[in-house]
Image (tube, rainbow, N blue to C red; front, top):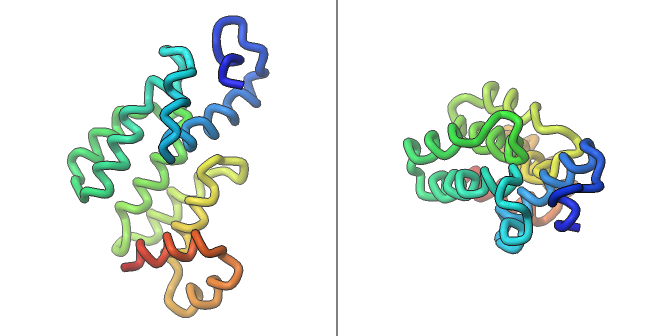
Length: 149
């Protein structure tokens, strides 16, 4: 599949964009093979370092580094939904409306959709959160609980 992203690629643009989003998510989850197999000028590769740097900065609570990494990812990047989610997480717990607005920008077909849903779960008030747990899935609930503290 990755060889179809090289010269003379055969994947139509809408499918190519969807695949790039999936490849970006795979890379963020640790699949380094993605950037090794794609052409060096592919957008997934070009923005990969910044996307991982944003993750590391978020996890280390380094706000300045996070802002810098996010700023390095273009608006039309395959990592754009990742950017929206990280920006939404920065609003926890004080600005839930702003966070919800950012999360609403993540599309139904996004490779980051499950992460978006787990993040939305974390933003719910306590009673709603408890009601949503049975339908959310084990991984989403664990992630949401970690975000809630």
